[in-house]
Every structure is written in C-alpha cells, then in structure tokens.
Length: 485
Image 1 (cartoon, rainbow, N blue to C red):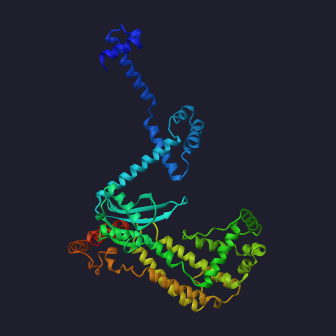
Image 2: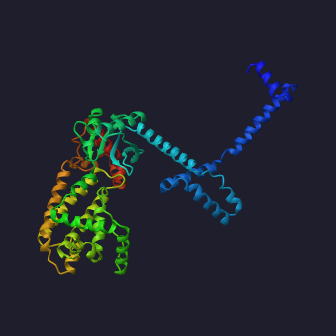
C-alpha cells in the first residue's frame, strides 16, 4: 500500500481516473459498500425459511430417508400443494427454503452438535449419572461402541443417548476403555460423578483384570457395575434339552429352505393363499434379535399344515416333522413358552425402568415356572394355550410330552436362578416406600439415614408420594441410594 506503487497502479491500469479528485474515489467506495450490502441481503435466507429448513431436516433424520429427498420430493410437493390450495403467491414463498443435500446434512450435524452440547452441560451440572455400554458390529463389519446415560434433572430421572463411536483395531477392554475415557476427558466429565455402569456379559466388558468395568473401577473404586438384565434373560432362556432343541432346529431348517430362494418363497406364498392361510410368508430367525425366536415359532406353528404340504417333495424328512403329533405338540409348547419369554422381555424395557421393577418381574416368572412344572406333571396344560388347543383338537394325551416340558421348565428355572442369583432388592424396599414402618437405612451413611428419617416423618410428603408416579417421586430417594453406594 505504498503511495508510489498505488500511483503507478493507477496511471498504468486505470489511466482514465488519474486526474480525478479524492472525492471521486470516496464516492466510488461508498457505492461499492452499498452494492455489497444489497448482495448480502439478496443472498441471505429469511428467518422463516431457515426455521422451515431445520424442521424438514429433522423429519428427514427421524424417518431415516436420504438427504436428497428434501430437494427432490418434499419441496416440489409442498410447492405444488400450496399452489393448488393457496395460490401461486403462497407457493412462491416456499421456493427460498434451502433443502439441498449438503444443506440437510449440515442442518443435521448442527442439531446433533447442539443436542450433545445441551446434554453435556446437564451432565457437568448434575451430581451423579450412570452409563450403559454396548459394543456391536454393524453391517459394514465395523465395531461400534454405543453409550447411554441416565441422570437426574429437574426432579426427574432422564435417559439419553450419549455417543456412538467406532472402536479402532481390536475390541478389547483396553481399547474400549481408551475410547470411553477419551470422550469423558474431552467432554469435561469426571469418573467420580459416574455412580453405576451397566454392560453385557462379554469378557471384554466384565473381565476381572483387563475388562472395561475393571478399568473403570480403577478410576472410581466406588462405582457399581451390573450385568444387563435383558441380556441375562436372553442367556438364561437360550439353553434347552436335546428333544426340544431338535424341534427348534427342524423349524429353523424349514424356514431356511423356504426363504433361501426367491422362487421357493413365491411358491410357498401361492400355496398359502390357495389354502386360505392367515399368512403367506415366514419370518427369519436371528440369534441377535432375541424376540425373533418366539415370532418365528409362532408363524411356523400357524402354517404347519402348509409347511407339511410344501415340504413333501423338497424335504420329505421335514414334512414328516410337521405331521408327527408329538413333534407338533413340542412345537406348540415352544411357541407358548417363547411368547411368554418375549412378553417378559418387553415388560422389562422402556423409560424409567429400574432394577426394582425388573427384579420383581423376574422373581414372579421364576415362581411361575415352578408352578407350571408341577401342574404339567399333574397333566394340566391350561397355562399353555396353543399346546392345550392342539392336544384337545387331536385327542392327544399330555403324557407324551409332559416329561420333556417339565424337564425344560426345571432347567429354565435353574438357569434364571443362576443368572439372577446376585439380584436381591429386599434391602432397598425403603426406596419403594420410605414411609413404611419397616423402612430402614441399614445400607446408608449416617447423614443419608438422617435424611431418610426426616423424609419418612413428613406426612405432607407421604400424601404426595401416594399421588405421583414412582419414576418422578423416587428421584430424591434414588439420589440417596446412589450417593451412599
């Protein structure tokens, strides 16, 4: 910006302006700034269009649709509907809404970053929180670590998705903990505030020396580590005797035979429609989808006649399975028991579910299995609806399958007792009802027990406790519990 160089530039590049006065150049500068302001105003999207863009991007994300659907389908359709219903002037107001592929992606990233920022601010401000870990492999063979968090906020206990990150290299306890600890450090969270960790039963998670829980305990020795209750149910119900296992394998083999080829599926569907069946397709069984076993068996049992007819030519040995009364009776029992297990699994899911409610349902199920075993040995099958209907329809005696069923129920009860042997919530009955006469704080510190006594003596709080839900009313009680532990 030396004056000599500026003068040389003016005389060589713009000789027509070399004799102009200084006021001329000031006016040129002002005109330039006004043009710049007009260009910015023309290129800037209105606030309403920006808000509409974010709302549409949010819907695209929730529906799991491609980002291009906004510009290719949603916006043109919205413009056409407005033009028909409201007129061309209203339709023209929608045209400036930015919904390109890159714009939708950017909107999603901004909303995601904002949500995570709000969540981290809450976790930094609250006194304690708990996390749940799950490591799984996606369809691209990449190991993903998913972390959920539960924390108290404004009188409620909330559950949120914390993060999902790819685990580089081996999925060992060391690598998983490094990834988790790096996120905690970057987010400004401290292990001292984490009061509980829930994982599955994998060795990388629960190993005593090098597992994730062991490394977390080295950072916070007072932390509570638990094995996921849903995962325990899946493991406890997985094993069964050879008689019932052969029935399950035969059903899965039949499903694979029909579903493995498109032609087989079409022919089977046509056969089902010709025989006026309630369904025209089978369901796949997947080990990682715990509810699929009961759903697959239910569908196979409903289409057993169609399966027997379809298997006569391709798989005659499987066709014999569907015509053998004893095998079908075992299939009916498996359908009933796995439907019951599915109902148990679903009943222990959902928001605000705690170990107190889950342990009660598990204990009730274990008592039921013992009751069912005694009744089946007495020849009573009314607790298994589809087995009872099949036996009555075919005039069969329960004696043909009662020993197998009784053995499986005893084994099921034994496995549940083994997997849930460490679950004892009787000591925490005061959390359910702190106003009961037997409520004590045997596991509490002196300060926490004083707070419990003060709370249990408050008659106004007793009335309020009876009027609100357990999830909202147990916040302060759960806080006492996790603080002491």
